Length: 81
Image (cartoon, rainbow, N blue to C red; front, side):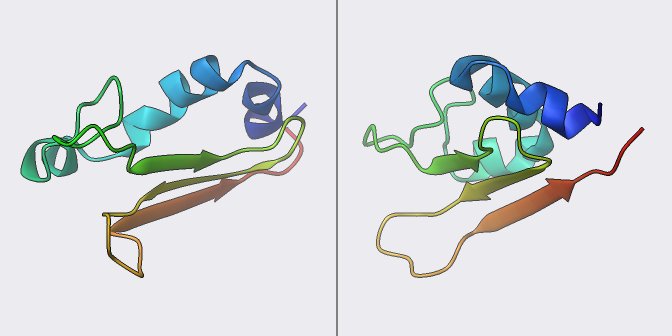
């Protein structure tokens, strides 16, 4: 079974634990994002994970409040091992 698909079967908090490492540390510090809560200084959740259960694709996105476009986005898709 492909790795992304394996991870996607985990609980949301476990998936976020894996995928948060895909965000460069400089973005956490530069935009004052708490790396554990994934919230900004105002307490707004600005990191989004789209990784449906059993899917082979994952999207991680940082979108600042009031911005139309994502500040950072990475999509992973895998094939069979």
